[in-house]
Length: 328
Image 1 (spheres, one colour):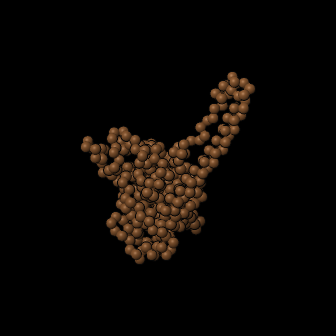
Image 2: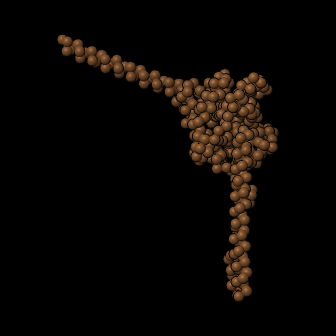
Image 3: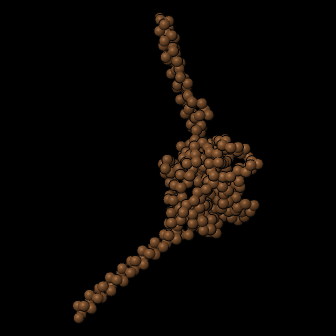
């Protein structure tokens, strides 16, 4: 009898353990679902979810994984403000230690102005103040922000969807901007005037990078030119001995162009998210309707002069040019 009671007790104990494990698994599964596991990611082009903003930020060069500490720094100063992250480089093509990003808090939006007290508080802890204009047209997506796990799910699901959308439509959309607003995370990629969303530190890095590239090109041009002159001189000397050989030699050894033009050399930065797309794409490819009188659907750029399938490469071509436009 005692033996049977002992066996029953063991089974009851095992049943309780199994029930607890099942409840734990169901709880974890429910938590993950609530965090957005099965949320459909919808990417679209249109008007952005925010207008012009003033933000307090810190700029960093390094792995994007370090952004978490910057988010925490901003939250510790003011937990009521919305967080924002601007990521300038594609982590799939740029080594982690060279990725550039800015993380901070949105101090004001639209016509509102940040208070002096807020500005001084953030500056005290090493944040800088900068303003972004309202993006005229963007590629965007959103994801629920219900738990900390939502951030990891969003990063792993939304960014690939954005990459696919941009690549399929051959768009130039960068940088990647993440806005944590209430219970949603908004992913925004400007389609025009990208330089307006470069913080001063980023613009300075781009200037230095272009200057270094120009110097390297000039040095290569000088070396190539010297080699070409040497080859030409040797041909001229040989010409005194045999005119027919000179004719054949010069026809074969005519110097090639010294280098590509400056305009061609100033190509898209290897760092840019925009390299996943081509130089540009018409709004027709974005499935946006245009009325017969030439006025675009809400969110279209008013100064584009878009007609039919006209390419808009002059509006969003390459990253360095965008940065220069932002400085002008």
